[in-house]
Length: 421
Image (cartoon, rainbow, N blue to C red; front, side):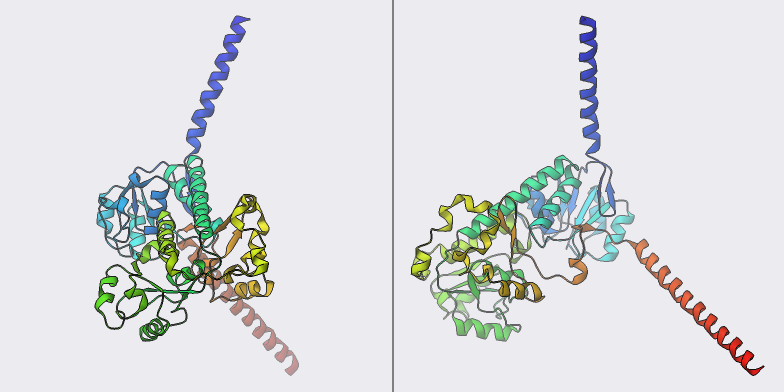
């Protein structure tokens, strides 16, 4: 019996060891779009500042060996740059001996092909447009970096944490405030963010009014700013000091009251912790000064309803976004005709709510072309073979058309000959 017990124990240990080794082997290879990563990468070159932000958020900053000039995160200040993200130095990338290059769609096609032909795996990552895509984007990036099991699990956890953070920030916005007028100014000429950019759309999320929402010319934008006299102004780095002495801005209420704040526009396009930090800062600038925020007294009907924050169980209810007390927010209106207008309009994409089984999340997204929005993957590599296949199909179809036309013409000739005879 003892011998049998020892044999069984040995077999169990062997099976356990095999299972552990099998699990380790299954982490790689990882396949993303048309690319297969055979083993865990030792070094990463990150050209996309948004992907760099996700890598930092997920704890992989130490794996980045080179970056682009646009990756300005403090965590990467000591990492060498290989140039602009659209036209980086391929030679400097190869000198890093990195295994993976993360880029976005701004990268030059010739540069991209040169990196691939050199034997380095290059992945172009597409930004997420909603919460579900954000989770998949995190999972894909972390799978490439750390394996298809442990990496994806870490990515999904960090993405959900990011979404919860944004959701919690949204809940801090006062429900009953008069319209707080604001804008985002790029330079001293008056060039500002309209509703075609995330910088412009973000004010709708913050329950504020972008005074330049429909302006498209710097002169028109400057005129809108001067006429509306905003309560608060956000601007690019270095613009604040110029506003203090510029005659077009120095007399504005926001400048006089010291409510001009510099925010890096890049941070609003990144889909990692930089976005959450920028949102937190901007919300504090808008509503952290209670003496500057006009309050609207709620109506009797609204005051009789309990506040949303006093019901912790409401966060798990999918019907939360259609509650009456939230109808005062224009972007959260429960009216079906308003929601249908938003869905039908291709020019007015706002920060929608997405319902989750666990919590309600918010994620901003930019306007995309139909080609980009139809892609299911958050990463891709241009497939030359598909283009050749399409061209061959076109040639075949044209040949078939020509042959059919020749057959028809021959039949016509034969019929005409028979008629003559």
